Picture 1 (spheres, rainbow, N blue to C red):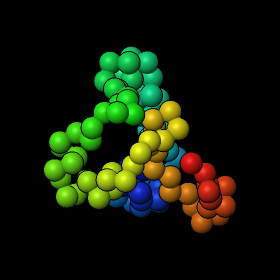
Picture 2 (tube, rainbow, N blue to C red; picture 1 turned 180 degrees about the horizontal axis):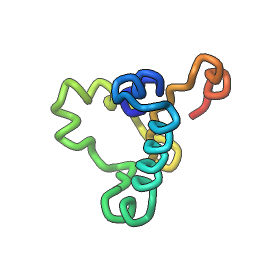
Picture 3 (cartoon, helix red, strand yellow; picture 1 turned 90 degrees about the vertical axis):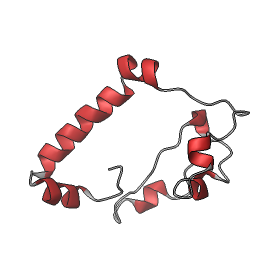
Picture 4 (cartoon, rainbow, N blue to C red; picture 1 turned 180 degrees about the vertical axis):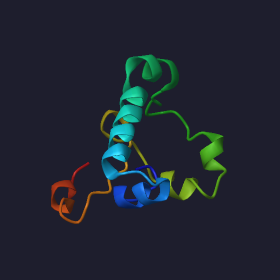
Length: 93
């Protein structure tokens, strides 16, 4: 979840089952990563592109981006594994 909350918290907040939350999350993820949306709205910055002013001048965002050089395929993905799965995400880039 974008907020970093576990699915249990999201299900409680929206008063739906975890399976319903998971189903809708997958639908949204499919839409956002699908070619109709992705090719129209996603712009991958190049290695020499400056940090956008909206991030650079915002103390809420800049601390998290100030030392970012790049990522594999220029993609940044927040990873918040469960305690049981944390070993599978350890030392992955």
